Length: 363
Ligand SMILES: Nc1ncnc2c1ncn2[C@@H]1O[C@H](COP(=O)(O)OP(=O)(O)O)[C@@H](O)[C@H]1O
Ligand SMILES: [Mg+2]
Image (cartoon, rainbow, N blue to C red; front, side, top):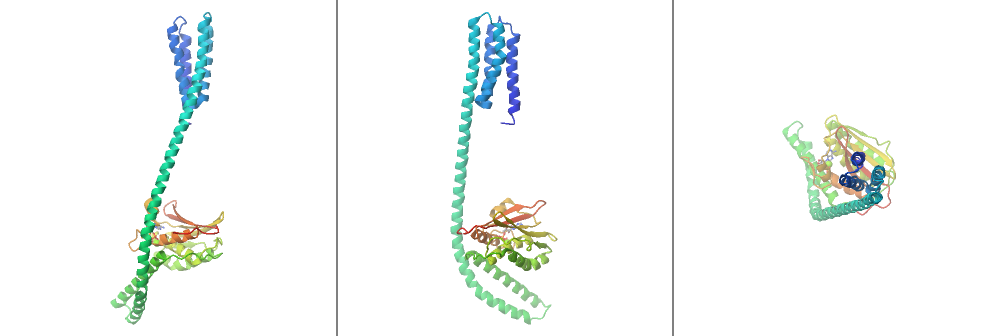
């Protein structure tokens, strides 16, 4: 509307000028033509009112009057009755401009209000649908969680036995033989299974956080120590600015460490060889923000939308639980995890931990 405004004013002025010229060049002995022209003034008045409201309508009506009045005065000064009717016509211009403008503005306002109401209704509908979906998912998950927890519990003990036995076997076979290789594979897979079982249990049986003050820098330092070798194996440069980390709000060190490990591990796994994973943190208006960036392929909007779903994974050997657990932990701390893009390619994951007193209850 505002972009078109100058062009519209030019059109209105052109119309007023054109109609006025018609009046001035047409001889006064042709009243029929003048009667038509005089009504042509309605067009710019109505358009001005429609486009710019009552003020616009009145303004155009005034312009028309200013343009037309001298003509009335000069052309029909002998005919007093006609002159009077023409001056009355100027009043019609003004009333028309005002009335049409008033109605147009009111209509527009009503339409806008209807549109807003329709939009908010749609929003409410969407939210309702989404919360319904969330509820169904939560129900499904709680059943799943029960099963997973029971199963994981059952698996843990025999698995520990297997691991112990495999260690003994591994220590007795001759290095360099196929048997040594097989037992190494078995030990590695048992280790992986143990991690998986632990992840299931963490997800299925979350414990409430026990926050302690000033833990954030230590947590980051420990993550650097824990994941340094992993990064090295993957040929990824891992830079964690633990020393510049703010002390941050009180957090459960074990749980937040698990969150940062999950997210940094994802970043390492997404990185190409020689890629760089950066962990930076800052204090910001009553909250601490930990930012993990990588130079991997980035996340599609679909992956971003589904990343927190338990068991959502795009990896061959992924559990799809890392971010689900992380989100739950951070939510229990009253915080959020969000994704962004890194200019030039890559993912930015932001963990926000608010200073707020009591974290909200978690589902
Ligand atoms: N830094 C990242 N870059 C690209 N994709 C990522 C990144 N972090 C997470 N993802 C995507 O989110 C999915 C879920 O992650 P997660 O819950 O940790 O499970 P998992 O790592 O076992 O796949 C991953 O499979 C991957 O597709
Ligand atoms: Mg992961």
